[in-house]
Image 1 (cartoon, rainbow, N blue to C red):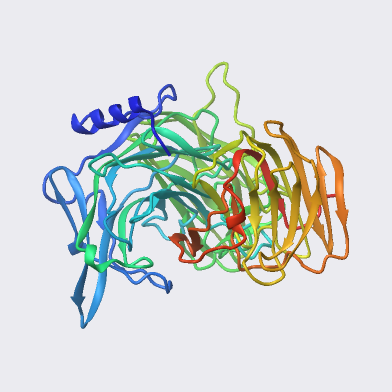
Image 2 (image 1 turned 30 degrees about the vertical axis):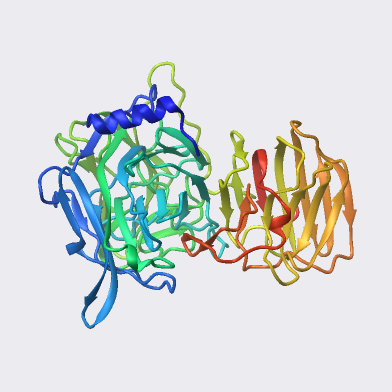
Length: 597
């Protein structure tokens, strides 16, 4: 990726004058937290050290140490080196994690990642919490593997909808980037109710659509050593973080309370441990229950077949000050007692709403919550005798919409019949033929039948592969190819063994076309703008491969996905050498592990 001369000069001026870049203009952001790493010690009121071994991964052999992290000259330094510890040679690195959690907002970091030799994985990212049961997603503003000038911008999801074994990677973008002459990189991202926007050196480089993914999680600034091939001669070295900044803004009509409708648990996470909430009291008196909910499919029940006293609680930090309102829906058994919702720690006197006995869902409200210290805490508690209970659902904490503003539309957290994976649903993603590409998971476009829908606008007539999930060997996989004569090809199988279904003269450069490719039990179909172009049956190859990750935009297999990291590959693809990286746009990409009727 190239940045403009003006933007690059501005970036240098920003750093050299120690004046920090602002959040994206015109979006109403306010600086809430600023860590400039002043002095000569880490601010341990706000941060703690990443320590210990990265376990369970045979392609990482690294050990994180507090001793590898220090503050000096207004920056956080993380040393990466080979050293002898506890009777063995270790690849050591480290990092810091925030003690408090951050939600919707704009995040920015100026850093100098170690690039001198392979093996160091520098990251600016968000995940988890000091609170248990708060792993919801992972946002990687960047993951940079040393010597590789393609950064990854990711959204990983720890939540899984009912009936799925795992959630496909929602978003994995790999984008070329540049450092300034001294090795500094200005990186940021916006986490919003509509999704995530990634920025490199002040320029938008990738965009992930994901509605109402509400969560507050902690920040990580890390340099993991021993990732993939390691150049020991280049170490010791260090990654340096100059600052971290967080900006927030008002979202009138948007719920800021994570998992207030208890959908995050689904049927995949322990029902007695509601995600984002900390339960306490009588064992197993707290439970996320499916069915007859106010919104979507799940609700929370407090109760048991014996006397009980139980509580759930959750704090929010680094929110905008102002006037908020809490609403919730409740219903109870006939004789429930001491059931209450409380709001506190916001800078004023604790507020509460008593939950009165109600056989039907009843809305309760705590209005006019005046937040003055950028934080708030919530508690729901109940006491009862055996077989008494209280149910609660759709807890919302929000600023009310101002005059003339519309309230946000409530959408289901898991949409019925949603695709396994989708990209660019609101606006197209542009490919220029460089190394930018997107990965999608191995369980996408998999099985006896698949459907791949997208809007194609090729900038040039050329041999390209806009979308593929095809291994090198075997008889299973698939790819969608374009040829320099305008032919559209749906290829079933592997690079070594595939069957091509060919639709001649199907596309023209610069002309948008809706494409649907379907494979079901040996039959492949190609549609363009709703018209069937080609159908072939009796295909012996299939789409059941589960070894190959999918990719959009490039056939260059210099990089491969290994677990949750992208590493440089020594493998070479004979098939991909026939093609060039795609130039043009893809939009409304949707993939299904079934046939759409």
